[in-house]
Length: 109
Image 1 (tube, rainbow, N blue to C red):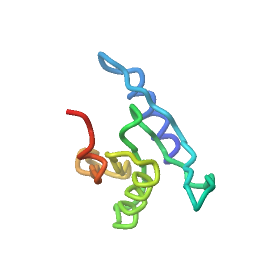
Image 2: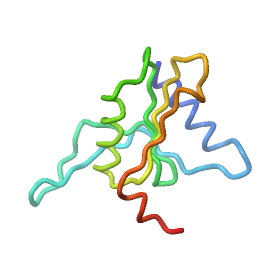
Image 3: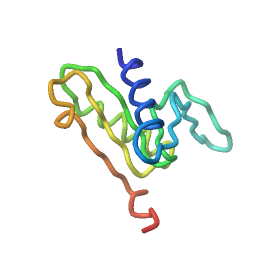
Image 4: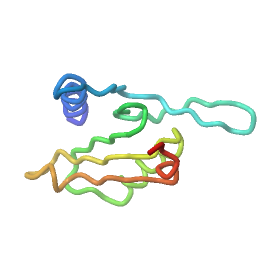
């Protein structure tokens, strides 16, 4: 079910509004280990404007492990912002958790 919400959200971000966003889906993560780059099986749901990682969930309730997962993705890809969204809810605005990390302070003003 998450893939359906992900596809719909990607469409909305790309196509709707005055100015669409650049949205990449299912981005493979790579890590640098010693002197090599390793592609991992971890996939990023959505990457918006090469800055914000969106992680889509359809769970009873968001848990700390979901936030930790998103923070890990943000760190691996060196992205400053993340948004965790749980679509299994009656009120989507109360089921979103924005996250920032140390890369946020390095964004241009």
